[in-house]
Length: 68
Image (cartoon, rainbow, N blue to C red; front, side, top):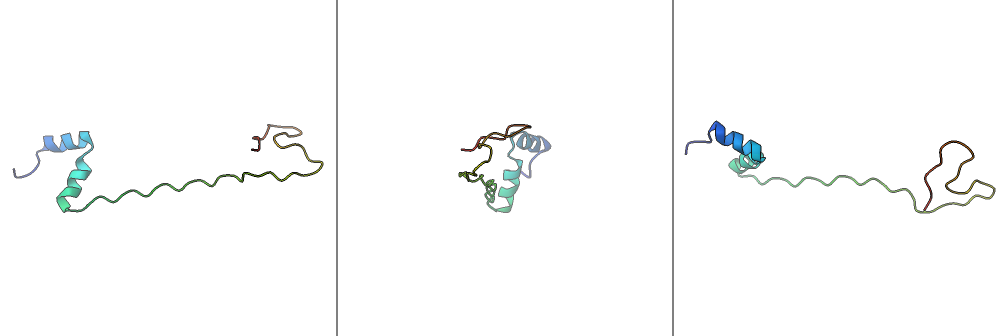
């Protein structure tokens, strides 16, 4: 075999193996992808304030999300 035919390249591309094939030709190993950064979670505490509206309520407008 002297090289892949255009039909072979099309089949590799359709299967999603073209990148792995090209990397294997160079003798390299594919690098593992870095994990996505996790979004910081809101604090799990509530600071009570005397005379304030209860958590999860508002005097007018849309209702805020409830505190846990």
